[in-house]
Image (cartoon, rainbow, N blue to C red; front, side, top):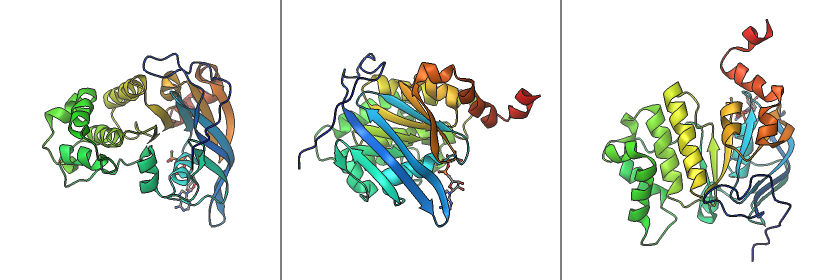
Length: 268
Ligand code: ATP
């Protein structure tokens, strides 16, 4: 079946980045998505789109339903209602492996690296869907983006720091040649210096042409990189739009205050 990706008006900023194609192709479309765990409904009918070449950020506080949304997209948690389209095809109900083959690749919260394998072996595992002659060259490309991984190419993943494991998980995802890369809170639990490094690399991967959906609690950092953003609160999308517009909205700043524990300070 041929993909029938739809076209919509160009989002502001799309195509203006080096390496990002000037296109309005919708790669990922989520419409009216609902997810339930028994009687709890953490995702209550949300809709959003990611266009080719964009870096879209889905931001929200703890428990807003961001991870559950990604789980529904990648088929690890069933959707109770709604549609999920990737490159114009309905992918609802498909499992993560099938989706990776099609180019929808997620770096989960907690990273999920193969602890007893070396860095190089982990990266090669990321290419399990491929059967081409470029795999070794692409390992070298990943090493260019993450020089720290190159230095430690033979080290076991389980002995690496949290930030290094995040880099490895992202590098492994890139080895699958994603059409859309889903990143679930890549800055979670990292030192401030490592957080800076991770956001720098997310920006670099985007600039090199990868379309990204970045899920983050760190609203201002995520929106500084993003083309557009969606704000989730209690399972609903409460705000969306151009990143700059969202950055200037005091309600987005609210999430950063919560994350850094400065909320009480801000309210006094
Ligand atoms: P965080 O940033 O803390 O990861 P989040 O926005 O990603 O938050 P989710 O992890 O999607 O939020 O959780 C949304 C809600 O669903 C929370 O109230 C959470 O307790 C609940 N939840 C998540 N997983 C399960 C589960 N397996 N069973 C029952 N409830 C769950």
